[in-house]
Length: 365
Ligand SMILES: [Zn+2]
Image (tube, rainbow, N blue to C red; front, top):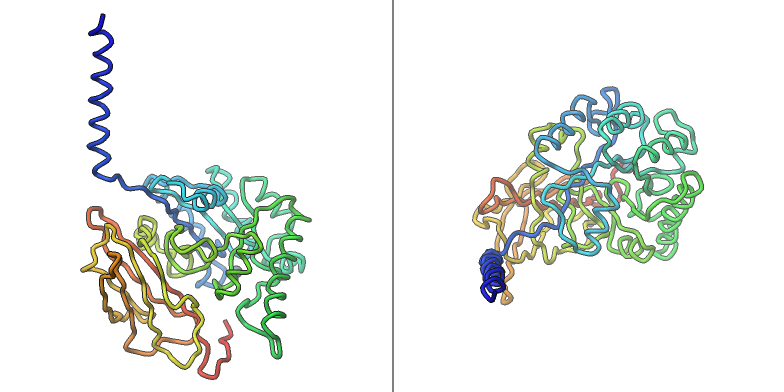
């Protein structure tokens, strides 16, 4: 009789032992998702912001073949907010600006495959009834097909640019109106919509991030990388999947890339003054599975950037990154990668700078 009771107990202990041994190996916990950003799905629109319908289908096929789950954007945000682990391969499909080609080309494909997606729209552009953009009825149809319609400002404004004679208070009040006014339009025309925001042109400052946070939004930029909680929820990265980034094989590398365990990035602001065309970026990384000896950063002309690094007292690594040539006006990027020590994939981080002309005036794109 005693044996009958002891036996399962022994089993229980032995399985505990196995569990303990496994725990010592520290299984990888993933807390990132790959958020893809599209604009037009068409062959008749500007190539730099377009993905052909055939490439779009190739991307969806690739997601399926490589075992990705396509999640609704809100579900990913809930996980990021609570820092809950996610499966390794989670992807999200997003479209910026609400172009008509998304309705005509992408929506039937997404409906057919029963995939969720999100569209960031500007109510002023919808209300103008321009044929290039979806109207409210079409957006409603997209919403009913499983799409999230979210906020991209009223007018697709350059939020970081102050108007002539505008003080900081008036500027931030205008930014608030761009977001709040758009949200009210979305609610009026589409019913309840989540508080998710995408910065037009991926442009933001720490002040705007703070405002967005105070207003209760989670926000996305346009710098590359897997969305992760390391750097806060007010400028989450996305991978462009249009223009030159629509190529399915280069997209595959990005789909599988992991976020670096980033503790800090300096400067906090991505906005430059236009005088120093060789900005310094400093990243602080906690230890991880990245091969630091193969850590590389490339500038906007694919030039290799200069690196120096030191281990800090807390065991974190501080890497300083510099360009030895001037980078261009506009939105130049530093892209940093390192191979994974055990798996055939990369870690990835991108800093998108906002570089005005030397006199402080802004580019016109
Ligand atoms: Zn946009």
